[in-house]
Image 1 (cartoon, rainbow, N blue to C red):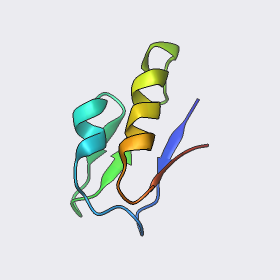
Image 2: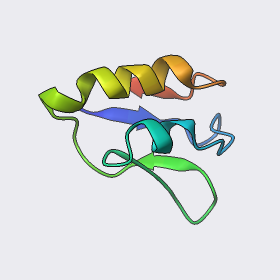
Image 3: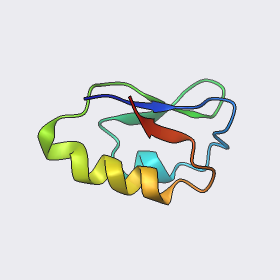
Image 4: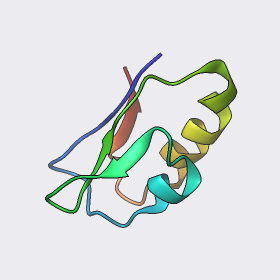
Length: 61
């Protein structure tokens, strides 16, 4: 399973990287991006990141 971060909507707040750093990392533009597929064990935390994103920039693919 994959999640994506809309680079036009992301404000770089870092909430997602704090919740699930194995999936989300900040890029050179200061915005989050996904660096790996989402494992079964990570699904709940990724959903928490999606729900916590202040701009709703994260979505399931």
